[in-house]
Image 1 (cartoon, one colour):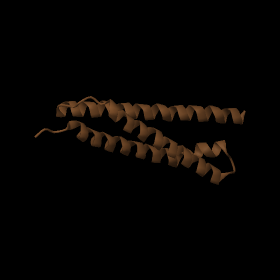
Image 2: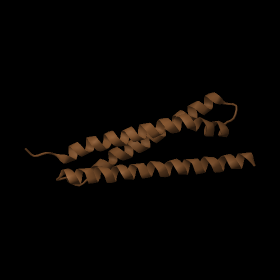
Image 3: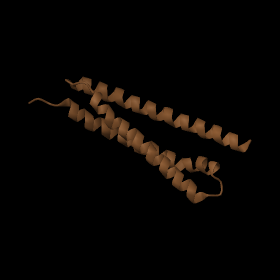
Image 4: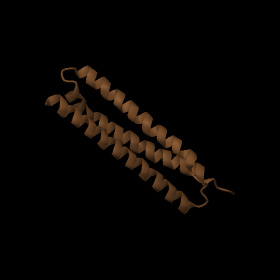
Length: 117
């Protein structure tokens, strides 16, 4: 019986990365209202809607990127290679999410500082 490690890898990789993306998104959404409220004071409903749009964009960008990376995988021929590829691909996604998060914080902080001055 010939095992298709790529299919197994796709499901494991998507499961791990989608879990991470959803968990990080939920945390950022809960805590992001403070930043959005500073940008749009006295408009709580607008802040909530803006934060929801940011969350949706975050999900679409990251989950879409994860799905697109599947086409670049080479043929996996062993379980060791499967673990290695899943680890590398997952690390890349975590790295990208962290960079996007910090860039967003820097941009929002600089914008708020301009408004306050």
